[in-house]
Length: 224
Figure 1 (cartoon, rainbow, N blue to C red):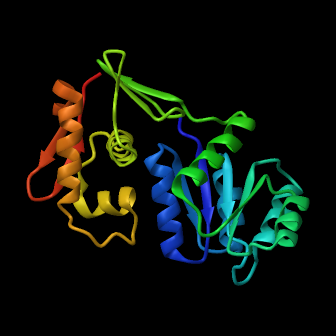
Figure 2: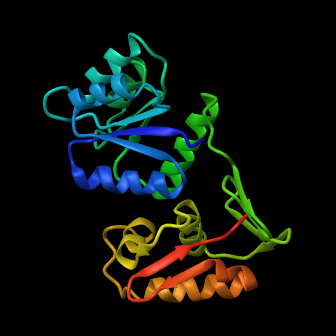
Figure 3: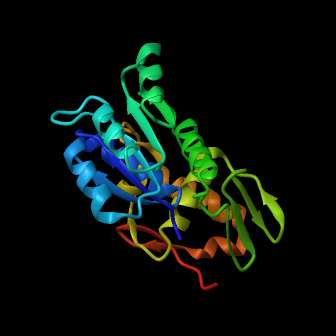
């Protein structure tokens, strides 16, 4: 079962970026628009494995959310903020946060820290996925076909895992670009097609699992 992560930020764009990062790695994501909403979601859903919360929000800020939740729960909490001073980080850790991530941050580092926190809390995500002759090891970012390692660029790996984690879902090219390349990508949309072509070539017959949805995008479809 996928770990469930609550993302709390008053900026919709940030929630969407972080949510896509997490979903791309196979996590279940809930969103809250401010501190009050975060507490409501946490009390209602009762199955949150990690909270990622912005500090500076209107109404109830991240510090206050952390303090209230710490009065009743040891659920892992990560502050995600533009406040980069050491005294802010020390304050966040002193009131009970498990980690403190300063914006902006790299995708790979952010996800590594999320995995590490969940692993320490005993809520680690499944580390491998396999179907027929293909296997993906998420921790080592390794793709194997018939036990042989497939050499992939970081972007090819991220694209493949995004398709796999959204198995049997038809994905638009623009959605793929947003999730894998990021919202600040302004290049040619056909870069998705080029990367898909390269992945199919490297996977051989397994490449047929990536289906083209004409005029729309792609879908990863495989019967285990």
